[in-house]
Length: 443
Image 1 (cartoon, rainbow, N blue to C red):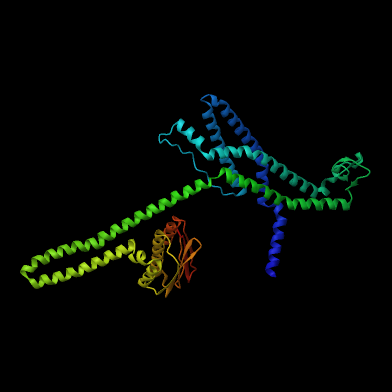
Image 2: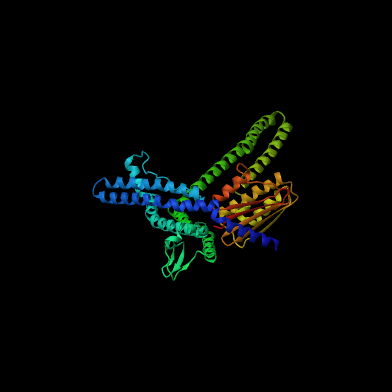
C-alpha cells in the first residue's frame, strides 16, 4: 500500500512538473527550431537535385549532384547533433564515403558519393522532413500558446477594453473569440465562473501539451534513426569486421601459445633426450651399467615428452570431444579440476563441431578461474539446449567479486563469444556465489 502511494505521488509529481521540465523545454525547442532548418534543407536539396538532373545532359550534372549529396550529408550531421543535444538521442554516425580506387581523386570521390546509400537517404530526409516539421511546429506552438494563454486568462483579460464594447473572451455561434465586439447572444467569460472555467481548461491543455510534443518528437527520432543513422546492413558489416578482428587475434594468440609450449616444453625435452642418448651411446662401451642407467633416465624423459604432447594436443582439440561429444569431454574436464565439479548435460544431439569446441574451451577457462581465484569448495557445470541456442552455466560457491572489465580473462572470453554471436552473463557478488552463463548459437 505504501509503495502504491509512493508511485502515485511520483506520477502526480511528474505530470505537474512536466510543463516546465527541462525535457519539455528541449523538445519544444527542437520542434520550434526544426521548421527553419527544414526549410533551408528542403530548399537546398530540391535545388541540388533539380540542378543536377537538369545538367545531366552535360558532364556537369554528375559532379553537381554529388556535391548536392555531400551537402545533404553535412546537413544530416547537423541534424544528428541537434537530436543529440535536445532529444538526448544516441545515433551512431553512418559509414563514411569510401572510394574504390586507392589513389582517390575527384572522379573516385564523385562515384563513391553517388553509390553511397547514406547520401541518398540524407537527401530523402531533407525532402521529407519539411512537411512533418511544419506540422510539428504548428501543433506544438498551438497547444503551447493556447494552453498558457487560457491558463493565464485571469491575468490578461483586463487589457481588452470593455468601454469599447469588446469582450475579453466569449463563446457564440462563431466559436471562441477574443477581443471581438460583444454579441448579445454570446456567453461572455468575464465573470468569476467563466474565468475559472477558462483557466481550468487552459491548465488541462498545459498539462497535456508536454505529452503531445513528446509524441510528435518520437516521429522525428524515427526519421533521424532511420534516414540519418547507419543502415542495419552497414551495422552488421561493422560488427562482422570487428568480430573477424577478434577471431584473428584469438587465433594468432593460440598459435603463439602453441609455439611457446612446443619450444619450452616438448622440444626442450626432446633436445635434452637426444643429448642424453648420445652420451649413453658412448657410455655403453666404457661402462655398460652407467649407460643402462642413462638409457633408463632417457626412457622417463620420453614418457614426460609424450605426456606434454598429449596435453598440448588436448589443448588444441581434445580427442574425447571429437569421439564422444560434449558431455563426456566436460566430465573429463571437471575431473581434472582442483575443485570438485558436478557436470550435468542435457543434449539430445550434438551441436556444430565448431560450437562444441568453443563450448569446451569456454568451460575449460571458467574452471581454471574457479581453481585459481575463487577459493571455492565445489562447483557445477550445466549444459542444455534452448531453441537454437546452446546454454552453459558454471557455478561455484567461492568468494565472488569476479569482473568482466577490460583487460581481464573474462573480458577476452566475452569478446570471443561475441565473435560467434554468443553472449556471456556474469553474476558474482562479493562473498559469492558466482554464476556465469554463456550462450552460443546451436549452428
